[in-house]
Image (tube, rainbow, N blue to C red; front, top):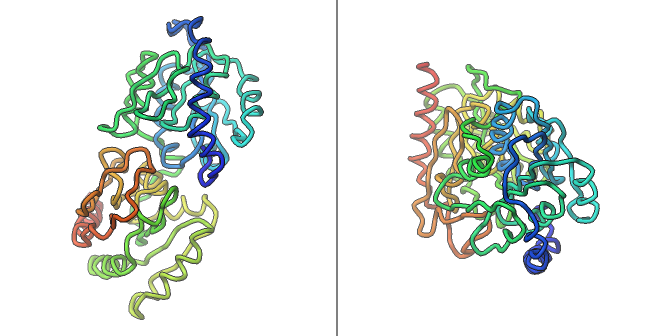
Length: 365
C-alpha cells in the first residue's frame, strides 16, 4: 500500500474485503498442498523501508535453503529503490499500485509456484496474490482486516511477537526453519567513527506522534559530548529539510558548530554516514531498522510503538520505551489515540544511558 494515498486506502479498506469475499468460491477448487519441488517464489511487500529491511532476512533464508530457486520480489514505488540494495532476489519488480489491473498483468508475466504476501493489513496485496496464478498463495490472517479469504494457506498474524517472527512464520509453511537476521545492505558498519547520527523524523500515518521534543535532543547531545569529541549529523528525506533547519535554529551557540544536516541528500549518502557513525539515535522509523541491520550501534526511541513488535534488529541495539499512558500499543501502524502524548514519556536519562552503554561497549571491544 503506497503511503499517503488516502483514496487508495479508502477503496482498500471498504472495497477490498468485498472483492476478496466475492472471489472465495474460486478457492474451493484449489489445492492447499505445498509442492515438494519449488522452483520459483514470489514475495510481495508494497511499502515501508523498515518492513523491507526485515523482509531481507526472509530472502536470505530462501536463498540459503535453495540456491537454484528463482526469487522475485514485488514492491511498491516507495520501497523499490531501497529494495535494490538487497541481495538474493533474482528480480525486483516495481508494481504500479494505483493501477491494480497493470499489477496483475505484471505479476502474471512471471511463472510462480509459491506467492507469499508479506503485507499484514492491505487488502490490495491479498487481491494481487489471489489473481497471481501461483500454485500456492500464502499470507497473513490479521485480526479485523478481512484479507485472508483467498489465501490457500493463511497464517495467523500475531501482535505478541516481533514482525520478523511473523515473517518467519510465513516461511515455516513451506518447511523453512528461518533464522537469518536482516541483511547488512552492502554497507556493514565500520568501527572507529566520531560522528553521531540523529534521525529525528518518523514517516507514515500520524508521524508527528513519534517525534521526540527538540530540547530532549539538545540534552542528549550535551551529555554525549562528555564522553568524547563527537560531531552530530541530522538525516532525513527532502520533506525533512525544513524540520532540520528549524531544529538547528534552536541549538544553543555552544552546540551549533557541532551539527550539520544531511537531510534531503541521496540514500546512498545516508548509508555512508551510518556506516561511519559511532552511534545512531533514531525514532522508530525505517532508518532505525536500516542502521541496526548494518550493525551500527543503534538506540531506538519508542513512543506509540512497542519494541517487542517493532524494535531494531541487529547485533548492537538498545530500545528506550516511553512511560506515557497508552505507549507501546501500536500494532499495524495506524492505531493511534490522537490525544495521547506518546513521546514525552521517553526519559532523556534512559536514552543517555542506552547511548553511553553502546558507545562504551564499542570502545571496549
